[in-house]
Image 1 (cartoon, helix red, strand yellow):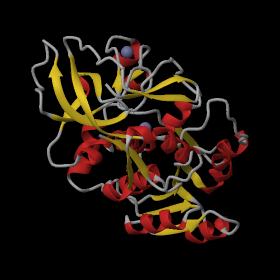
Image 2: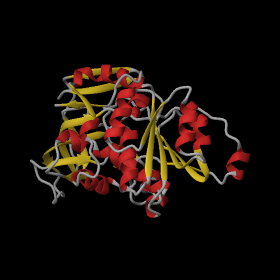
Image 3: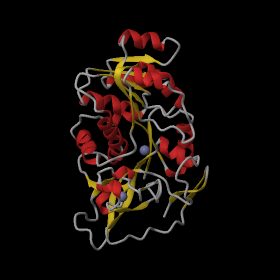
Image 4: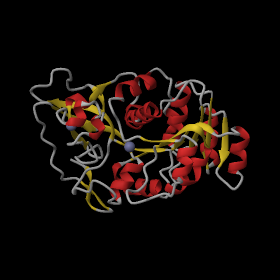
Length: 336
Ligand SMILES: [Zn+2]
Ligand SMILES: [Zn+2]
């Protein structure tokens, strides 16, 4: 079969001779139809984390079931499914206390085991969610949305909150919509790109602000005392360090964008203490796939305007480069 194989750090090869994966009794074989590229893929490509080579990346996957294992009763060939990439053991301490994203044997399709940038993918049946009404491209968007839903849970957004989202790429636009669905009184969005800010306006941002020298003055005009929740959707350590000041005293900062594992920031412990700040992390997905899908299916969150370009598998390296250099205005997906 055809697949994009990461053979080593920064070395991706499109091969046509990759053997079809064999499935176990509780697995299904999925024919990939759409698989999104994300910042995590860039980190994997750069060797930042989980480098076990060779690896077929791709963790934002939707496709069609072509075969099911002997013990699978709820899925059948022909079913359209989206795939929660998180593979957990359900036996360790963290699984038992419902923190499955910290499973001691955590794996993820397309991150630590072969994923969706291949014609066929082996996934556990329990990771598949059947769908009908949305397209494969929308369904593949359920993965980042499930991450965003978990992040929103972590931030415990209260009705009537004023929210600041920094970064208006696909993740920022999802947080904008999710914050509104969570009852935010207003969502302000910051980005460097005018086109992304225009989209944020269309998707319900109360205010949009260009990230430039006037940014602080503009944000202070919108929220004199700061915002109840600030969400970083850039994955830039510098942005994080510079934007803690926009959290209202007693408010929260959600670290959502993924920085490199060796990056650090300098924070004032006195400020965190004196201003009652909460700094909150949010890693991947924790049982949020079903709710994410319902939000999408019900039209509460619209992912269609966030799709930028469908690319063939042969263009994966180009796509990753666009992501890395910030030139991909919105979500790129490999489609088959
Ligand atoms: Zn992702
Ligand atoms: Zn576990």
